[in-house]
Amino acid sequence: MPTDIRVTGYQTFTAFGAGAGVLRDHVFSGRSAFAPVERFDTGPFRNAYGATHGGRGAPPRQLETILDCARGALAAAKLDPAAVDGRRAAVLIGTQGDFTGIHHFWQDTAADRDPDPADTHRSFAGGIPAAVAGALGFTGPGLAFINACVASANAVIHACRLIAAGQADVAVVGGVYLVDEEQFAKFDSGRTFAKDGRLRPFARGRSGMLLGDGAAALVLESEEHALRRGARSLARIPGFGMAADAHHVVQPHPRGLGMSRAIGRALDRAAVAPEEIPYVNAHGTGTRLNDPAETAGLHAAFGAHAPRLMVSSTKSMTGHMLEATGAVELVISLMALESQTVPPTAGFDEPDPECDLDYVPNEPRQAELRRVLSLNAGFGGLNTAIILEQL
Image (cartoon, rainbow, N blue to C red; front, side, top):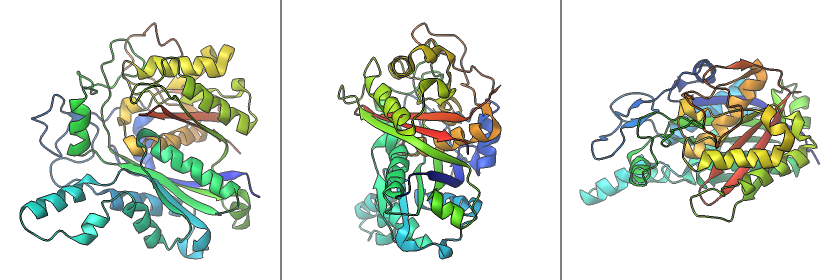
């Protein structure tokens, strides 16, 4: 059975705009996208800031956004969907669904109008990968992953397992979240937003996270399928790991035990020693509890090598993209491999004694990168680790 998983294409949408190029230009120069949110009225909330694309008016829709990314990723991979055996092609998307359509349903119901069934269906989490698969003609496994901040990372891992088990040759994987009033209100009521409108991971005085628009799709293929069609492979995924903290419904384990176990499983699967990982794209939410817990998890997983790691949180520029986070940050990690450049942690103005690693403050850094590690964590103590490796 095939075990070598290749990445052959990707595309993104973020607050910086559509396309991987604009994401690369901003993130690798340390420029953040935070500004007052104009998509809806933030007057009732404590916070007004986020990383959103566009001003006032109708927000983009999740389905159209992730479908554009999927088509862009396939084009980048030079893979015509019509040339794929659709029965062996999977579509796996991290999404909680599109609250815009759900709001339309309740607004129509309250006004005694008949809701649009198509609009409602494409807003459900399961409707999004189904519609993407239908548009591409892919009839293999189709799944929505809804487990919050690790959703699209889990989608990538599940795709790797399907391909490794010989159940798929190709997978379009990714995630999508676009800042909406529903989630904004929930995080605001939980007092998780940064008071100063700045997301400053691992820095002293950090005061919380901020939301951001995000979508990304990647094309994964078995080595055999990629070689057979003469595809240019951008990287391989030799290892991945998942683990739960079993600690608290929203707080991470203070010693990062689940995170360290996920990293250990990824290293073991890849047969890679800790010192062979020079750079980690951290989850790095800029919250009081996450950052020291993640730092502790990195120390536990990497031991004596931890002080030599380069660690950065690109959420300091993109914002937290919830279900899209894992996919977008995996693309950023791949960009780091491609450019041999480590993106910075923006807004890092004062070190925190509890966070004692090299966080690549404010400026990108040239480095020799053969492998990189992308980490994500979510409510409920969920943790993922994915290794990318140059070919």
